Image (cartoon, rainbow, N blue to C red):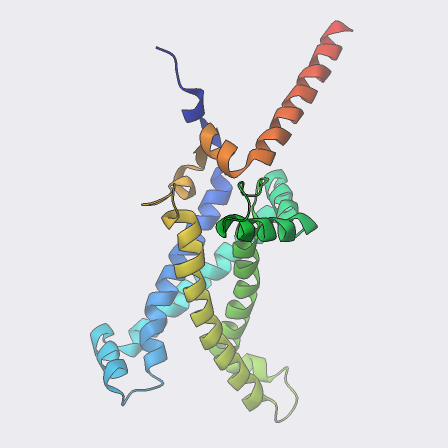
Length: 248
C-alpha cells in the first residue's frame, strides 16, 4: 500500500512563530471581551449597555483584566519584532510580507476569477495579498492600540512631555483612536481573518496550522504553488552544489 504523497505534512511555521501567534490571539480575545463593558460605560443609562455592565460585574475588575491583556499584547508584539530582527525565518517572512507589484495584479485576477471572467485564480508564493493585509493591519494596529493604551494608562507621565494646554486634546484623541481602532480591529478579525483562515471552502470548520504549523503538499500546491517551485529549485541547486563538492 503506497503512501499518498499529497497528504505528507510540510512544516510551514516554526515553534517561535506559532508561540507569538498564540500569545497574540489570546491577548486580543481577552481584550475584545473585556472591552465590551468598558465601551458600554460610555452609555451607562442606556438599557443594553447597562445590562452588559451588570452582566460583567465590577467594572474595575474588568478594567484590570483588560490592562493585563494589554501588557500581554505588548509582550507578544515585542516578541514578534524581536523574532523578525534576529531569527533568519523571521527576517525572511518579514521581507516576503512587504507589498510588491504582483499583489495588486493578484487582487485584480482574483476579482476576475470570482466574477467568472477567468478560469484560474492567481498563483501565490509563501504569502498571498490577503495574508499580507492581515499582517500589516495587525502590525500598525498594535502600534495604535498599545500607544494609545499607554497614554490613557499613564496620563501623569505623558503630561510631562506635552506642551502646556495640550494634554486634554491629546488624551481625547488617544481615547477615541483607541476605542474606534479596537472596533475596526475586532470587525476585521471576525470577518476578514476568520473567513480566510477558518471558514472559506477547503478550510471549514477550521485550520490547525496555528497549532502545529504544518500543511499538506496538496495544500501547498493549491495555495502556495510559487513557494513550492522556489523550494524545489533551491533543493535542486543545493543538491547540485553538494554533488560538485563530493566529486572534487
